[in-house]
Amino acid sequence: MGTPVDKREEYRYNRLTWAEMNDAIARQPVVILPTGSTEQHGRHLPIDVDLLLCESVCLEAGRRAAGDILVLPPIPYGLNQHHIDFPGTIHIEPEVFIAFCLNVTKSVAYHGFEKILIVNGHGSNAPLIDIIARRTTLETDSLCAACHYINLAVEKFREIMESQVIAHADEFETSLYLHLAPERVQMELAGADDDVMGDYVSSDSTTPYVRFNDYWSRWTDLGVHGDARPATAEKGEIIFETAVSRLMELAEEWRKWPLAARRDFHDRPAQTQIRW
Ligand SMILES: [Zn+2]
Figure 1 (tube, rainbow, N blue to C red):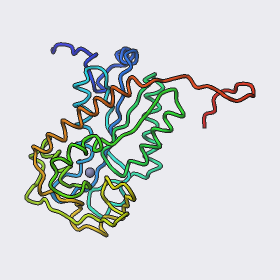
Figure 2: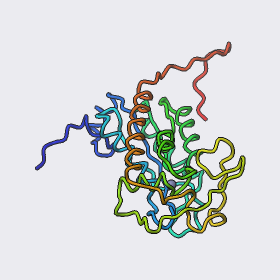
Figure 3: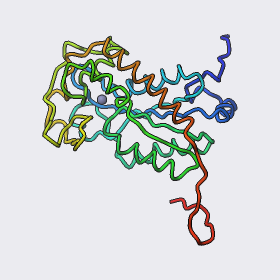
């Protein structure tokens, strides 16, 4: 028999009972949905990179936020047809991904949680989570926003990075994995692959112009974009601490974000809300 946990401190959504959920709804924490992928990440990293890194950041932010964040079970798969030539990658059709995640966010909204935040770890999910956040906001009485955890740490990482680009299975992701689970990183197999970069069209996740994704078997033998070799656990710790603290700040801002009533500016008689 263990001592009962104070459930105000519980940050994992599915560790609550339905009765405890009523208390959580009354408190109005930000409900976070982590989205990842099951996708090749070079010869040196397991295929759970996007899921592990993203969920770890979310869970630690939740743990430190002491009741102001609840973290849903993560979505482990994403849009990945472009990696399918590498063994093990799982692809979910974008329409299926959007529909599935919308069912999750709409369920959360139905229960009365007003602030939902999708935190993504897989670049190619980006346009999909944007649509999911918009549709959740437009089609429920709650607000939903979406972000990419990498963006929260990019600025800080630029101060310490030794390679040139932030893309895939590279210095950034490998460093963070080394911080979280070094025993699963095969650094002796870590390599570099030329990033596909034009003046405008690039595979760099942070390009300001055109981020292009082809079938990855057309442009890399290794499954890497960028250079994993300068990765270290020390850099990973800096990435992790930066991402966690900035996610907590973001969640706090989102928790306090006003949720105002809609207004109808037509001259015609008021109508019931349109729900597409
Ligand atoms: Zn990745």
